[in-house]
Image (tube, rainbow over all chains, first blue to last red; front, side, top):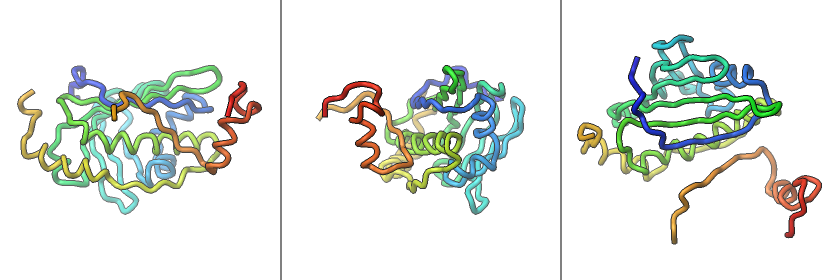
Length: 175
Length: 35
């Protein structure tokens, strides 16, 4: 299993959801749920530490690949992420994505944390910072109302421009 | 212009008018708000 102990949090997003921890866990790990709120992506995840993790686009192409770092239903799910739909993205070191699910009154506090092993530039973080609020707002909406949000989003232009420079310089090798 | 060091965003399945009402209607906010 990838050692992510020294990864540093760069993006944190918190939302409260009127649901049980078990229901939120199911929404995070069941492809029938993720297809509704995660821009049509379906998750494939082996339910054990070291298991494989894949997010597929609606046309079946792989969007994200990684492995399960922690599998503790219904409280904590940690996976590594490598973006697979772009050749430059595939060269970046994996990041770590953690979901923490905590009871909060009769609701749940869901915390998403995106962490990195290297000093990742702000421009490369912009995709996640734009995407996570939409994804997790839609997850909340699905669980509370049964209805996903219809939001269209493209990768930020600044991120794609910065990506080529970063891949050429490979700053993670100097860390 | 200074850059914010923290920002939170949420998407809501409703209309701008309803969000505006929710922000200023004491029955919805649960507190007095001066518009």
